[in-house]
Length: 104
Image (cartoon, rainbow, N blue to C red):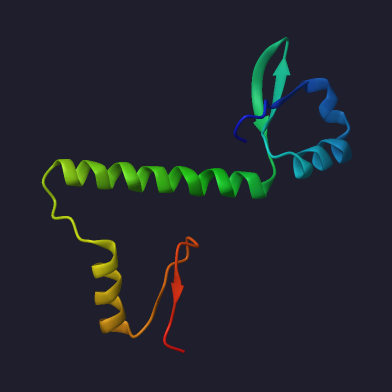
């Protein structure tokens, strides 16, 4: 979605549902539907929607964490935190693709 302009189509083109569905699946940006020249709604694939919502949740968690630190919350080093989890649970896998490590 970054750097690419969304596709804009008039609402009367929604009659061709097979083509709209294919366009949604192939597009990495939302499709803006207009009515009388004004934005009316947005269409996107489920994959793009889920990705967008996940990014929004991550951004919200980061902002919440920043607010907590600014309010005086104790900060913990990431490696130390992961090590404490390893000691407690035996293995830790970071799902964000940053690190994947286990004991077996």
